[in-house]
Image 1 (cartoon, protein in one colour):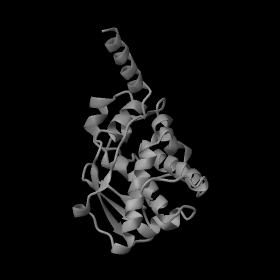
Image 2: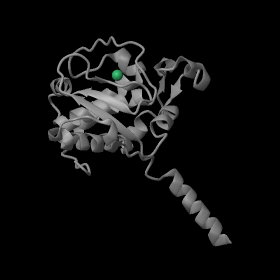
Image 3: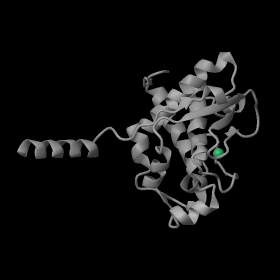
Image 4: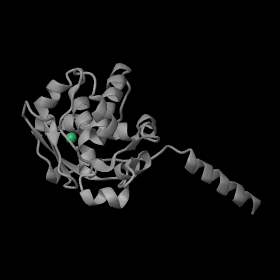
Length: 208
Ligand SMILES: [Zn+2]
């Protein structure tokens, strides 16, 4: 009996100090469109997105942050779930709600305009390949696409922009107000900073 109690404590502490949450987003092939030449880029971008979400860095950076509830796409959710704002914990619960979601991608060979768009809870995102390449020239193409995917996944999860107007001081720094208040915008930029570092460090990512 004593052993059992000790074991229970051991597993309880493993639960507290374990590896954190996991998500594995896979390409919903039935709901995707991209040329065969882009398959490895798309597969790598999904692997990079998963690596970012599953990293200790990502899972600690919003723990003590609170965002306004205007981030909810659905107005009804604003009062129902978090009238006092969205806590980091609520944000993580939303991102990691399902462990193995399948998500489609339409990779358009478009340049100019937005990097992409996603309607909430539709299971598919649209990415403008050349706009993304041009916007993040300092990153290899799969990493740049991964930045966009991490941003767009917030829209998939029901988080929208209150406004699409951002005043960025330059191409390497975000609009301070947007960065503070807008979850999708913030996560896009944070992913960009994380991946710039990982590329510089030549950090290996499984599946890339
Ligand atoms: Zn967006």
